[in-house]
Amino acid sequence: MMPDNKKRGMLETFLEYLIPENNNHLWEYSKEVVQEAKIKNAPFKETYTDKAYIHTWLAWQKTPGRQLHDAIKQKFLVPTNPQAQIFVNWFKSLYDL
Image (cartoon, rainbow, N blue to C red):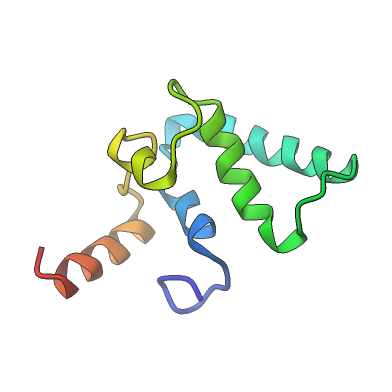
């Protein structure tokens, strides 16, 4: 269950909200590439498609191969999307940050 308690998915599904708008073209292309890889029998499970999307996109950043938490620290992923802000605000409130 996603942080909005409505959509199904995993952390990587949610992280799409953190991709900067000026990088949307590359995000869309990473999804196309992953789909093409699946057609060519890439062995990842269908349930891991969102993981493949985000990690493909991260591989094309200034410093490739970052782990998810580090991608946030390096500001490759930014929580400015309103959907992300709802979660960020809840998280900060929960942990008194």
